[in-house]
Image (cartoon, rainbow, N blue to C red; front, side, top):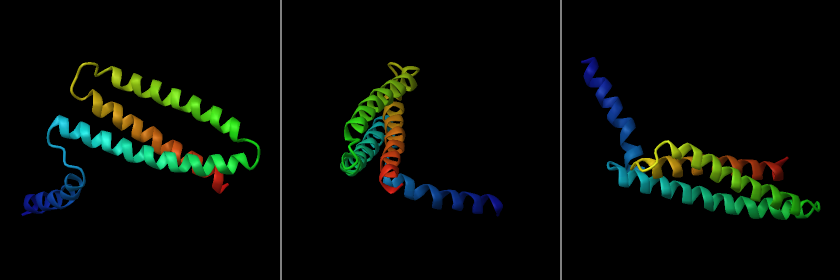
Length: 117
C-alpha cells in the first residue's frame, strides 16, 4: 500500500516538469536548457534597459555599462570552466546553458535591485 502511494505521489510531481519542458533524450534536454537560457536572456535585456535608464539619470550609466561588459566576460568564463569538464560529451551543452541561465537570472535580479533600492 505504501509503495503505491509513493509512486502515485512521484507521478503527480514529475508530470508537470516533463510537460513544461520535455526532455527524455540528451538532445531534448540540451534544447530545453538552451530555451531556458534564451528566456532568461530576454528578461535580462529588459532589466538592462530599465537599470540603464535609471542609472543614466544619476550620471552613472557609463559605469553600469562598464560593469555589464565585465560581468558578461565573467559569466562566459565561469560557464566555460563549468562545462569544460564535460568537453566533447553530449551533456556539455546542457551544463553550459544551465550555467548561463543561472548566472543570467542572478544578474537580472541584481540589475532590478539597483532600481528598487
